[in-house]
Image (cartoon, rainbow over all chains, first blue to last red; front, side, top):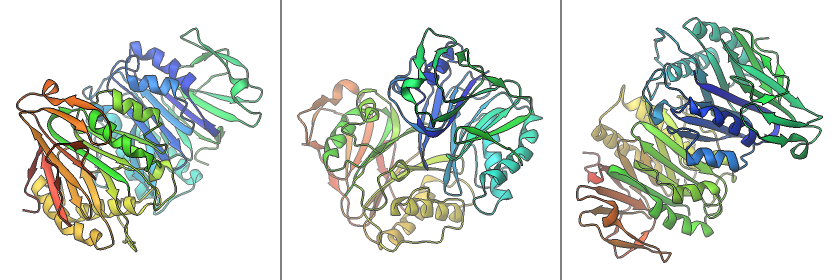
Length: 254
Length: 254
């Protein structure tokens, strides 16, 4: 299984600490990593088919504070598709004049939808196929840019159609919201004032969040498995879709 | 004016030397830089709205050998659109299951085409608008993946429609070929055996290409202005479209 990490915040926030925790798990997930940072409408998109343990790009992400309001990261253990750059998550497309980024953990069996519209996979993974299908169905469902609530409603209808093909833990963002779908294993955490010291689960590394934040900051972190000790990580229910805006969950599919 | 740099080669080749030469020109072009590296069908896409002189990302590109068969780089001096990540070239889209990267130097006046298909600008530049229009017109002209020759033929018809709006020096690649259109200022260079020592135009930096190449290597480099001294750079004619495949020019629009 691959590992996912997402972040949604009400002020641009760096993910050096969380990404360091995620990359620590790259021993078993050595088939590439990727991370997408939204900065307003803009997107920075780093992918490498080398392990996050050795990639110079991963070093840069751990030590260069890129502040973003929406982040999606993924470290890969290849199950479908060869180890190559075009099979490395997150994937990126443009729809309605916004970039979209997507990462998936799990396997979809026998998922071969008709892709007749403008979104075609470049690589060979079931994940990119699922992303292209999602983009196609969103484009079909809305003539023009829908609201976050409308998008969430459509996504809540689409998720079960993917999930029934296997395991579909996923993260999706267009820079305005972070959508997270739990199938078998996904957790989230809400951080807000008062911020304290937190410690990575897998490494003897602590950080004092209070020194880097203000009382108004709100950050939501999503990860396959909890990244830190002693924080209130919440497990997703099977089939649960959550939407995070400004560092907080908002009603999905309402 | 911004500065463009492109590379097309018959074996994956790094561009650390050429990019160092390009970044040297970032004193006057401080409004961001970007570089797209194709590796087969995959694409690495780095953009930063900070100057290539100070960006840690640019440092990585100068010192970490990323080997690629097609590269497009751009350093920006903003003339249209604010300095922001979404306005930073090269731009990226997917068409027919291939990524496409595009960068532009120049200005288009009164270019407001109808964009009714699947390609919409995310930022505010005339350049991204031109790229979206090119993708739309290519998609309309060919039902499925055309050959390089067919693509070149269609592009040769489209270029004048953009060029008449102003200045349209551009680089475009889908990972299989590099298309370069000269409007006012663009040069190219073909490097092949025997390789020798070359020296950057703007900096006291030399490299011995012979030590890094084999007799079979062929590399085409395109740049707004010649990057090196004592090499046979050729100026594009106004309105000239060239197509490079495997490090060599092939007939365009034939």
